Length: 512
Image (cartoon, rainbow, N blue to C red; front, top):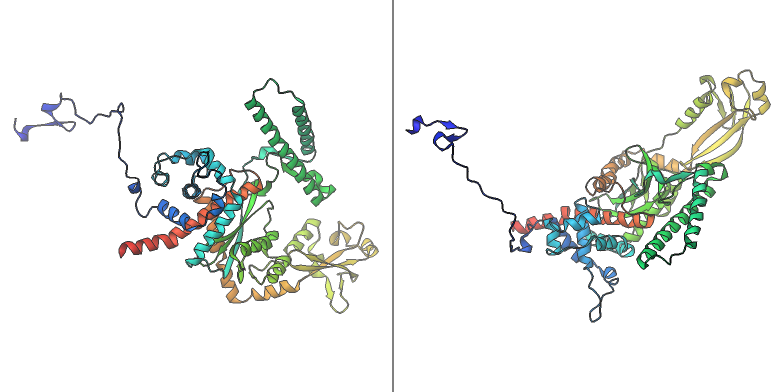
């Protein structure tokens, strides 16, 4: 048969249709001895090499001082702190924040294989190292800022401060408030007393230790929940004691509004970011959901980590208050932010009270010479007291006589809810600091500076949540949560060093 007459059947010549196809066999019942060049596991521009190089630039004395095993004495050698730091920074940069998962990745991921030299690190050692080096980690953060400053990545001329809410490790099921919380604390205390009275003669040593550890941990949680409950009750007063809510599984966590709009137990992570290269220079963890009272604490943290304060700080409207203006001015820092709106809350309150349009505050005439108001019916409202508000303003209250309002035919239009007193009108004037701030923020130069706030302040927040996957803490308690957030901030700064300094320098050296 000639080639022109040969026909194909399913891609094969008709003459070979009955022949068996020949393929490569897969044999998994064999043992292989492989030769691995560890140094060539990853390319020269791999992030693991950069992190190892960066860790070598840092002073790790505080970590090595905690290693109990020493030369010439008995004891198993510990993992090198430089290795453990590099593993955690590299793992977090890949979005791995679980010690178990990170230990598994050490077995097969090339970057971790190169760092560990084909060895492994157990998850218990990784977990312990992450949570038990808080003070040493703070010093490591300062050392890293020193390296970044020396390479021109930190100028500290202008900072942006912003907060982000991160969910706590506990769930919402542990939340208790009011009588339900008090009943739980009473019942838990009684249960702990019963456990202390139980005989443990029949239990083995390991079971006794486990039970004792469980009892001790629960006792600490109950004591912490009671302490937090008493603190919040004193702050809010007996009137609002029934609204005090405490999560019994993690008492230090607070119910906060999360970025997606829901409410859950969490913490408020405050970040101070340098405006030049977006390097984080300070991180403060708080159990308060509002940002307004945290600016002074953030500035003090900047002074502690960097040795000096910036000339200006960019903030959003949540930080603009008379107290923050005073605190910033006292530290020699200029505040740049939006101008707070005035009058909106007064109009909303008038609508809620049922005040008609004809008797709103705008219809009352103010006499600046006598410091009085006159209502549309000709009755006087005299000044009763001033009050300084947190939003940077001073409110002056003016009130009419009770008898004048009681006899007025338009009472239900003017003050339908004022049964025991006359109509009250509030005149608002900004504090001297706020007036100066408003005038400053009217200039185009400061407006242009404020427009750069979101670019600087929200960049690290998005990076930490999207790339480092820190949307929920794995550790519990504000102390350990602070340590976990510090690991994330160190990892973020290390990644910026790789992006802005290490890779460009490697590219230049390779081209040369």
